[in-house]
Amino acid sequence: MVAELDGSIMKCVHDQNGNHVIQKCIECVPQDRIQFIISAFYGQVVALSTHPYGCRVIQRVLEHCNDAKTQQIIMDEVMQSVCTLAQDQYGNYVIQHVLEHGKPHERSTIISKLAGQIVKMSQQKFASNVVEKCLTFGGPEERQILVNEMLGSTDENEPLQAMMKDQFGNYVVQKVLETCDDQNLELILSRIKVHLNGLKRYTYGKHIVSRVEKLIATG
Picture 1 (cartoon, rainbow, N blue to C red):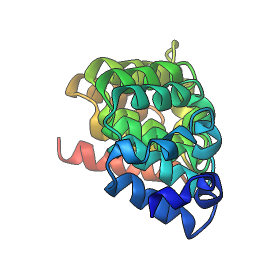
Picture 2 (cartoon, one colour):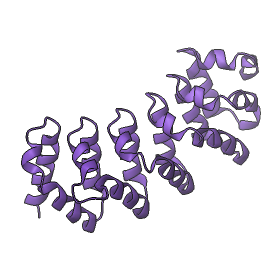
Picture 3 (tube, one colour):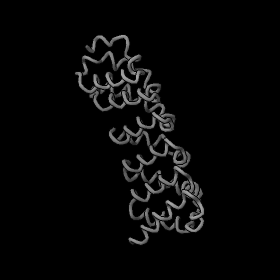
């Protein structure tokens, strides 16, 4: 049955029904029998990741293909376009998938590629979810890189201020409060407290205010 799909892989992947068949092949059929399916994705990983059905298929490949060479080929293509994929309405799911289920060095690579753009990414609908995943699954040092970037280099904490007032960024700040260590928590809370009254005037700032007040109340 699987052999009959040969020559029509992409047609199936791009089809709202066909993509489920390809996903099932990847999940259930031994890899040596579906190498022709996987090979059809080589060079197309970014295009597929930004497609509503293709992004699901790529996630199945990442989950089920244990062959090191295949994993490497697919992952290399993903890693070349981390920032593009993170901001894409479908691609962001592929990056989130790697952050959640990938190897530690893959996670580190993604975080290092996003570093320097964390504030911008946090204010973007799809990429903000990726930044939240970085905070949830990153190690202490990686989390520190992100926190430092959000606090900025001056006492004004402009990046943090901008994020707290942003419709997507405020969720990233909430995630920071949830995931950071006690030392950072204390530091960030002290930085936020200065702006509490001002934040109350902003629709999205209010989320932060209630979160911070809860944290203060619980000591």
